[in-house]
Amino acid sequence: MGFFSKLFGGKSKSANSEVESLVQSTLEGIIEKAQFDLSFEITSSKEDDGGAVLSVQFSGGDEELLKDKKGQMLDAFQLLLKRVIQHNFPEDKTNITVDCGGYRDETESALIERAENLKAICIEQGKSVYYRALPPKDRKVVHQYLAKDPRIKSRSLGDGLYKKIKIYPAKGGNSAQNNNAEEAHHD
Image (cartoon, rainbow, N blue to C red):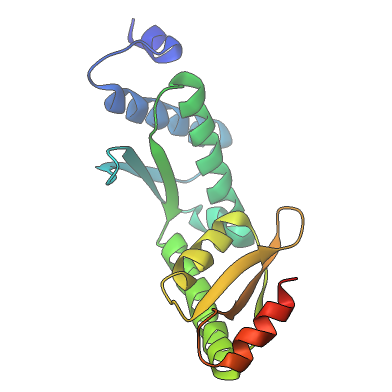
């Protein structure tokens, strides 16, 4: 009976534990079929808006495989698990994050360090600077970090999945010269 309620979204008080259970069985199946040397731990927490967050932390002999190619395998696991949850629990708003050995924190720190350097150049020179083309999840990290400083603004430029980030002085910032140059930029 439990299996069918998972498949067909049977309502219960413990929807979060059902989602967690679904994630666990999905991961166990993938790891077994792919013969990965991995284990995982799932933790659950609540967001400020009341939604749940499931965090999956991988460890084991195949960790490097997950982190390889800029963490594409971690991203793939995360996307797959999101889709499995959405398919089985369409009304559920659980967010899921997948990490391995602190990889996400390391890459986020590197993105922020580079953004800080570019921000300093932008403020010092009073002109626009550009961050290399990034995928959406990385751009979000950079934009959220830069949004904390009222002296600068940022926006994504380009088409497709990978876009550059333009970092430029905010209006009313350091000098009138900066403002005039920026207005000319926004025709």
